[in-house]
Image (cartoon, rainbow, N blue to C red; front, side, top):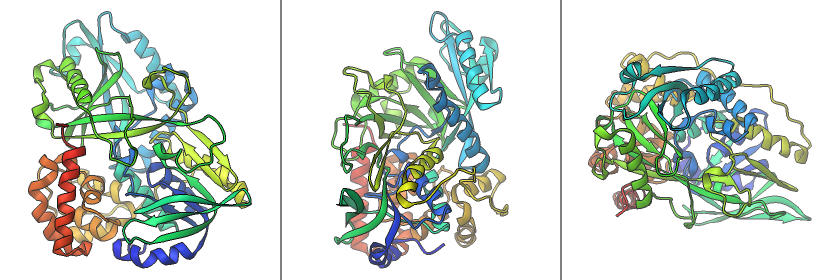
Length: 525
């Protein structure tokens, strides 16, 4: 693949803007990346444009779970659940080290819903859709070994089942890498201002280069919008359908404060909503909330004090002996889910269905809603809507999302570390391996992230700002105290020259990053 950094972007942008594209994808989250990947595999001339950074929105701020949506069975969304569990298995098979199994435990308490029999019946259907039995009930004496520290008052036992977990931002980058390897192009830092229309048809778009200050007009035979919560901003309104932005927020704790071997799913005593406490990237996460997000979508979402109290009370409810409090919180994140509104006045956020929708006009397809797990299926559905506008046909042959690579031994790393890097970097693993040879295999603090990964991102993953590097290409801004402030001198030493920044630019970036972290990724004041 060609070089992919800020220097490449500056040189390539005018030429890319001058081309005529079969398809331009607007939106650099998992949905947009999936659309680009499937279009590139079919030889379409395709370009993706993202206004901020890849995975900047929902796709770096999710609950990190690749799952079938167990709760959707109870809502009657059987097709969504079936598709999700099949795609979950596909991702587990194709991308080990990036998408990994995660065991869940649902504790059952006397007089509380759901009881063991009801939940077991739900899981039996869940497993039938997946084609594999995947759950077991543990009475209290056995559950104690699985879940030390769990609240035991009226506890009957617990049911264990399996789903999967991922690093959502790295998943986006891996899918984009597959797309670029097969001829697709992707640019960040381009804000689409409007769609161009002629004779009642979309013919392209106008975008501002936020980095260089230039305005560009791009020509496309079809535009596919995959902008998540921003889906209503550019499309031609043809009905009453609209996005209902819902905020989901999370707390992250050091693993030593609440060490877990499993994810725990339970109902919050306050409102009966499902809440999760789960291990992720060597830390422990508490999530998620589900509230209407009324803030300006151009600003980064952030957790509120109400949500902090809600999540902490859930943790205290389920793990009272741990005595988790605000002082234990390492970082926070909040994302906005693009849920298609039912239009029913007064309907609670949690009761909205998670089905997606396609909104069409000549020359343009807008994807509304969707799930992380089913990004491949969503991409195919979008392309099936685009194909007739291009005079093409499209079939799904079930081809792999991720090209399977020959195993590459990295003798300085353990087998689990090798699998982790292979899952995250795929085709680019040889390049990363050379950096590991050059820089060594040291990790950043107590995280699983190697210093070489930061250098790789700076040179090869179109990093435009410091928060791109620390919050999405790596997750150091979430996993280290104060967003990794103590590690910034070493990050600067390794990455400043590779990013092409002089001292003044670095100082600006560092101050902007620290201010952003304090405002949106720490506890609210």
